[in-house]
Image 1 (cartoon, rainbow, N blue to C red):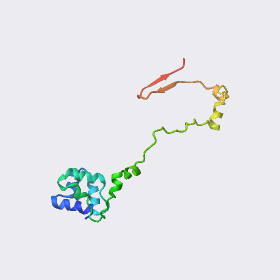
Image 2: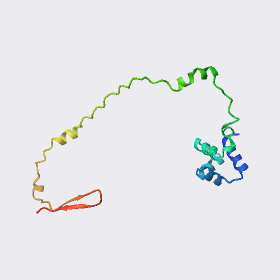
Image 3: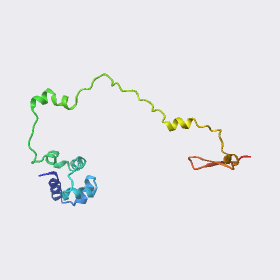
Image 4: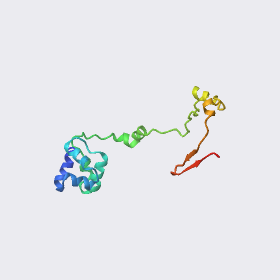
Length: 148
């Protein structure tokens, strides 16, 4: 019996609707609907919520799938700690030597911008005068400056 069938069995045994079941375990109703329709398989989060809400069912019954082969690890490997060493290799105690981050060099455009002369004013700009300056602040206020 797979996990989807076990959820269907829970609904039958507890005499509850799928929407009530979803509300009780704290998941979206569409999630339970998709599981019951066979579109999705229950996630680990949903299984944990079922176990928390219905502890009387037992985690073993929910998690045990008869379709899976009964595979047990070799006892000598478990006792010697080889599994842990392979899964979590020891890291060296010396700190890693990370290369220093280099600052990017300015591009050609940025270098050329620095060389532009600001004091060169075109004839059109020289005939214009400033009427007013507005400064807007982040709090929504502003200040207006007018030349005298």
